[in-house]
Length: 368
Image (cartoon, rainbow, N blue to C red):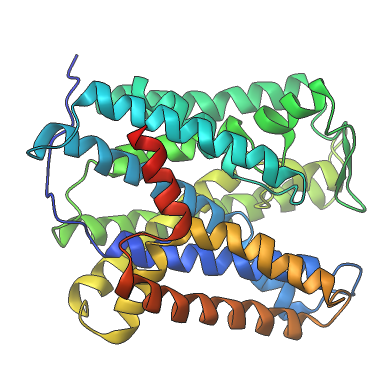
């Protein structure tokens, strides 16, 4: 079995950073709109926007995290003076442990926390990142299939009040385990599978033009095909309803919503991520010196900082100010304003410092 990661290029590519910034923007839009319009009647355009971004921006972020793990691992194989594999594995585990702890702290104020999934994924990454590509893809598939088995063996909605999107019994031993591994907003099964897919994608040579173009092509195929299959299945089981499957169950099984994260959603979200990452890579290569690209690169390189900041400062701020039960348009504009502020701060920060505040903490932990 081949246990090597083939080096491609040691220079950091700008495309993934641009995609990371846009993924953060997508999550900001979803989160601000959910918090600020709680209980408000939906609007057609906002429903479409939320359906487009919900889970897909997060999936893009997770896949990019996996690509980042491979870029780190590559340094252990192809960069002079870089840590060896054992040291790099220890760095990944320490970062994973930190993210897991930060995730549990974040969970006290934000039930949609995804840091815990990153933490568990980084703790597992050293066993897979230097294995052959087939092993990585099989492991990714294993996380997806395991969720499918758990979904049909256990009651996915047991702890959920879907009317209020409230998770009951979270701070119990069983609730914490179920929420982290199975039925949380974002859970290890199957979301770690997307991070492992990112590890595999990171092995491709993104410095060429062919790879991002193929990424966009295959992403479009996955987007369209999963949407068509979903629509056909929903029509088949919903008009008229089939015996033993009501409309709500059919939507859960064959819809493209992020909860539960069943295969059709995962294929659709992966397609979305591939299109975004491929397009951003091509744009960043062609216009790398243009101000918008440099601004998004700076923001993407502080993505961890802005993920934490948009929860603590952004969502926390709108709650303190009482900006809830407001219009969808106001929520969207607030998200765009916060992202614009993030871009401006990122540009100024990166002129003086190499890393964002949270990125600096991660690097320091890796040096312990």
